[in-house]
Structures are given as structure tokens and as C-alpha cells.
View 1 (spheres, rainbow over the protein chains, first blue to last red):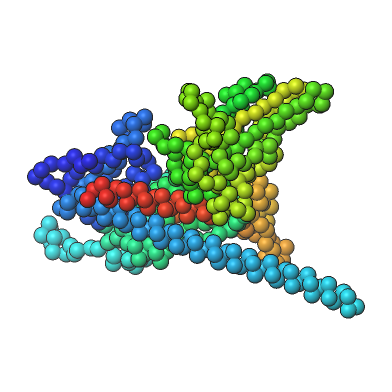
View 2 (view 1 turned 60 degrees about the horizontal axis):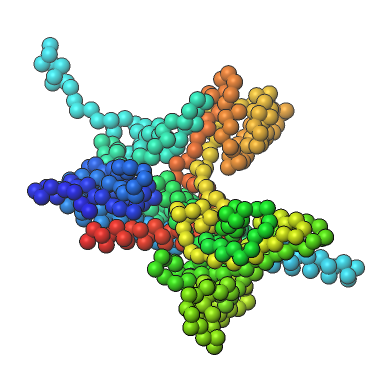
Length: 117
Length: 380
């Protein structure tokens, strides 16, 4: 739901239902990073009601488009986080497996040397 | 006189000064932007400078573009077990890290016991207390294999898991403790028969129970080798004295932590910023010994300089708990600076057992993406 003015579409307040700080703070962060934004913020009118108001003011571009771009930027960031995290977990598991194999081979070679003596 | 002064006045730019670095912030501003200074009384510079034009007058672009973020972002896993993990996220902002933490705690779905049908309870534990305790028992099953059960749906094999608990303490035998391994999984659904008002009951048709399972859950490939059981078999549910009996059936459904904490998949998930301990001046000999003994987690170490002189070094800054013992006392604030790095988060996730912690984090990121997508579709 967008509350703006018919003449000026560069400033608007967007009211999202069923949302809370989780997405509002993240979207506010990405909005702030956009150079076209002069002012952005979010508020929660009442804590018992799951509604968030996000205010966006831009340097001329339509506020709706800027908010959409910010959400898409957030999505791209999340995807990158997921890829990096998966790769890091795989690398960690692989290096642990190698370490376990090394320890096993060290133990077995130690036994062999004892038997030969 | 005034005209003479006007002619001699040149335009003076701060960039002409010899020691101002061009293209990046001067060191004191960089400290403000990227570190939280933890002083003796309170931390300062805690907010993150997010506004893209914050340093516009200095010619620095504070906006983060995707390529810069992709280059700087790193994840390093420190510890990874079946139940918990600790990893570092470097290059991300607190807003996003907090979103992940909130989703991990409250919006990842799990299976937990919701409805308890009690046939017989002669123990001293009240029905509702027993049902509450059963709800909190973590169940080792992948919640992604199930759907949500809404009010209009009928409980079937796609959205319900049925357990049975039948324990009896016979007269003359000692007291027994009912642990969570007494919960038996019923893959064919409920066994309690519903009382139908139908007078013309055909004895040939199956009696109606409280669930409507089309097929046995044992046939689903994931459950063939791994039966659904509670994650920990030694959780005490109730205690029975001689002559007491509990007979009940528990139905587990999918839910999220926001509705009730029993559906939270993490014991807890938290993050902290990387502590940075900096020695502002050389600390030698007796002062070094004093500093090393002050720290309760042994952050400092002594290194020998030769000729009997010793110097203090920071050996394990990551272990610092910011107890501020090292800056207590006179003058110590001038020698030791405690800081936190604003974009380096040490995440710890402890899972209750339904899913391994690395899967939990991946699912949490997926959920944030889904939320963004919902907002985007609402806007278009």
C-alpha cells in the first residue's frame, strides 16, 4: 500500500502488512546505500499490529521504483551470502575430512613401525 | 590594507595538506566509521554509517555496490558439529545480520506436538501440564517434507506426525520415570477411534479415527531408514507412582517460532562483533605482567625482548569478553584501547536437532529472499 501524492511521486510512505523489523531494517539499510535516496526510515505504528511504514524520499526518481530496486539489491545480497556460506561450509568439511584421514594414516603408520620393531 | 589582503588570499584546499590520504577517509574518521570504541563508561560510535552521501563533502562514496560487496564479503567456519556451529561473517552490516538472527529464531518452521488426545491419565501430572511438556520435546524430522495444517484441512500423512505414549506403573513395582523415548511413532496415523453418531455403522468399513492417512508414512523414502523419534531420548516427561497410567496420542504439526517457542528450531542463535584490543603504547616489564594478570580470559601474552626486558602483546583478541578489566584503574585507558569491528560478526547457531545448523542458516537466508520477493510483487 503506497501513500503518496498524485503530483510528486518521488516521496511516498509504503505500508506493509504482516512484516516487522526483520525485513524493514534490512530494506532500510539497502535504501540508505542507494545514492538516489535523500531520506528513508521505517516505523511500526503499534507493536501488537504487524504493520510497517517505510518512508522513502528520492532525488526525483519515483519512490516505488527505488524501493523495488532496494529489495532486489537485498535479494542479490542474500543470494551471494548463501553461495559464499555454502562454499565455506564445503571447504571446512573437506579440510576436516583431510585432517581426519591424515590422523588415521599417522596412527596406522605408527602401529606398523611398532610391529616391525 | 584590506585590498592588499584580498589579492594575496588564495583558494586553499584541504587536499593540499601533505598527510591527508586522497580517496579514503582520514584515519580518525575511518576509526569512527568502522569501529565501536568501548570506553570505560559506555561504547561510542555504535551506529553504522549507512547513508550513501555521508562522506560526500570529502569525496568518498559510502554507498556499497554489489561488486564491492561481493569482493569484500567472506565467511569463515570455525566449528561445525551436528548440533552447533560457529562461523564468521565479514563485510556485512548489522541490519542484515540481525535479520538472519531473527529469522533463525522465529520464522524457520519445525514440527512440534500440538494436539494431545488423552485417553487415560491417572498420574499426578495434570493433563495440560503434560501436553505442554510434550509440545516442547524436539522431534528429529525434516520439516521441509511436510505441509502446514490449517483449520480447514484434515490431518493427513502430509501434515501430521502421530506419536503414542502408553505407560503404566503396576501396583507393587517401584516408581518409574517416563522419558521421551517412550513416545512411539505411529506411521499409519491415529489409532483412537472417533465416536460417530451414525446409527447405521457398517462393521466392514474401517472405523473413523482422528487422522485421515491415505498411505503409511513409512513408505516415504526419507523415513524408511530413519524413523521419526524425539531427538533426545532422555527428556523426562512425567513420573508415575504405583497404579498410575498414562495413555495418550500426540499429533505433531508444522509451525514457526513466532506462534509459539516450541516451534523454534534453534536452542538459540546469537552473534557478537569481533573484539579488537589495541595497545596504544609499548607496555613493558612490570606493567606488562600486571596487564597479563588482569585479564580473566588471557588475551595478553608476554614476549621477551632480550636483556631481561619483557613486553606485552595481544595474543587472543577473539576471546575478549569486554569485561574492561584491562582499562580499569588509573591511566590504563591511555594504554589499552578496546574496540569492536563493526562489520565482522561471529555467529553461533545451536540447533535443537531437527535440521543441522548449516542447513538452518541457508534456509533462513532463503526466507529473507522470499520476503523481499513478496514485497517486490506487492509493489509491481
